[in-house]
Every structure is written in structure tokens, then in C-alpha cells.
Amino acid sequence: GDYIEEKVSNLSEKSYAQLLLSIARSSKNDIIILNHVLSHLDETFIERATGLSKDYIEANKTLVLIDNDVEKISKTSNYITWVSHGQIRKEGSLNQVLPTFREHEKDRTSLKSEMEIENFDYDWKQNRSRIPEMTYNFKRIERYNH
Image 1 (tube, rainbow, N blue to C red):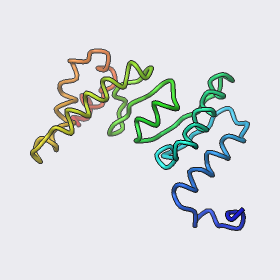
Image 2 (cartoon, helix red, strand yellow; image 1 turned 45 degrees about the vertical axis):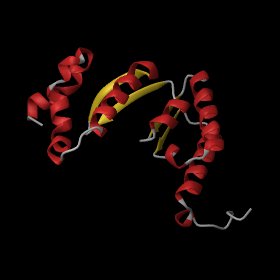
Image 3 (cartoon, one colour; image 1 turned 90 degrees about the vertical axis):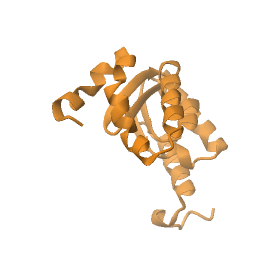
Image 4 (cartoon, rainbow, N blue to C red; image 1 turned 60 degrees about the vertical axis):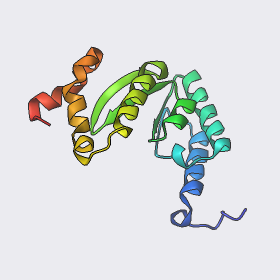
């Protein structure tokens, strides 16, 4: 229709995300990576993304969805890797990762002072021993002291 002659660079974020998902759905690649696409999709396209994810899982292929919208990730994925500041904080099934992530976000959003906010991630890394299975993910902090 109206988009046939439209330059990709002129598309809105929503239209661009829909285009990328449509291309991905017609792709025959073994691996597809979609970076910050889900957050721009409406419910209809999230259902299509979920269908794509299920198709890839059934075909034993890889679909990597990178996004900040945890709710949309949880609708479209069966495995999650929580990455923050270049470090893997936790990975596993949604049931393994999301409760820890949500607790972390609840703690982070409860902070009031600027100093607390600035020190939150550093404090979290220093106190990660409360989550022993995550210790292996933070070797960089010992090597580089950050």
C-alpha cells in the first residue's frame, strides 16, 4: 500500500520495527538477531514475534531478541540473559531470571538520593555473594576494580 515507495529512513520506529519483524518472519536463516524491535511493536505484532519465536524453537534455530521491555521479552522468549553494564548478571529460563531481575528493579527504583543511585550497581556487584550462582559472571570487577 502506502509504504511501497517509502524510504526506510523515513519510517517511524514502529513501522521500521514492523518491517524488520516481517523480514525476519520470511527469512530462512538459522540465526536472527533483532535489536530493540519488540519495544516498538503493538500487541498484534508481538503475537507475530511470539509465533516467530515458537517456529525457531521448534526448528532448533536461534532467535536473539535484545530489548529493554521485559514484559514483551517474557511473552516472546523461553530463555533470558540479563545483561547490565556489559556483564551477564543472570541467565536461564524466565522463571529463573525474572524474579531476581524484578527484585533488583524494585530495589533500584526505591532509591531516593543521588548518591544511592550512583552507588547502586557498585553496591550490588559487591554484595552479589547473596546470589552465589552469579559470582562467576563478575570476574571483571576483581581484575579491573570496576
